[in-house]
Image (cartoon, rainbow, N blue to C red; front, side, top):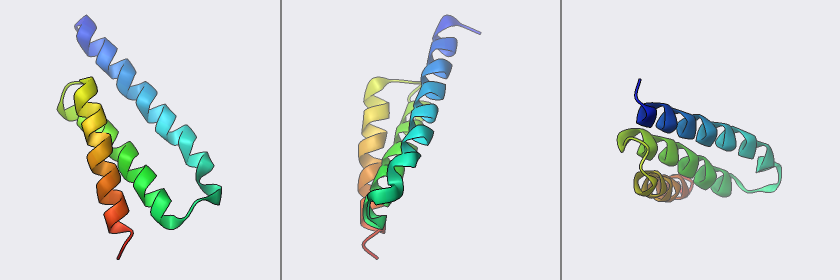
Length: 75
């Protein structure tokens, strides 16, 4: 495996752990805020995977996922 593959794998693992650790903070927030945060976390991971670990892809995925999670909570 190349160094880039190892680095992006570590970044993805770190991001996944950060998302899981952040789930503990859901106790005092509304369901809409929960959906927004979960969407942002899922979007960040998906964006990272789809763009090979690029920062822009990760941030873009988080933004899009957050918007989708927020909109889904409106229904």
